[in-house]
Length: 108
Image (cartoon, rainbow, N blue to C red; front, side, top):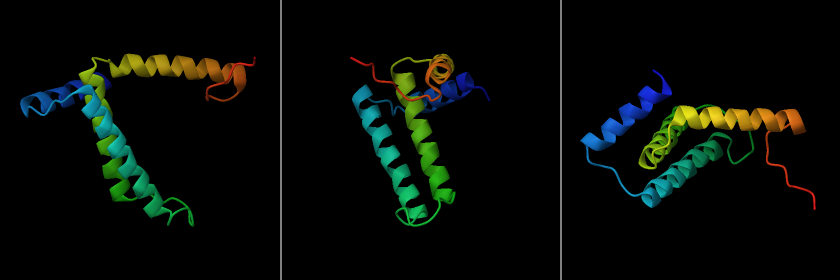
């Protein structure tokens, strides 16, 4: 399945169940699901005392985050494949220039 197909599948799922909502609600959902994913990391590592172990709960929460992000992309009419292509170009350029992909503050 391509990202375009996945995006359409989720769009159809949301529309047929009439569960679309505002951009702000979608964003809050993304943040809520990311919090739940973070909680699973904390639980898996015993709050940093041991190495991360992949759990079924982590996989499920990761799926919820991904679903929520796709719903948000659909709500604002972003094509995910195009967005990922743009992000990869940006990160490739940053890595070539700075040997990392993080944002670089401009010197004054």
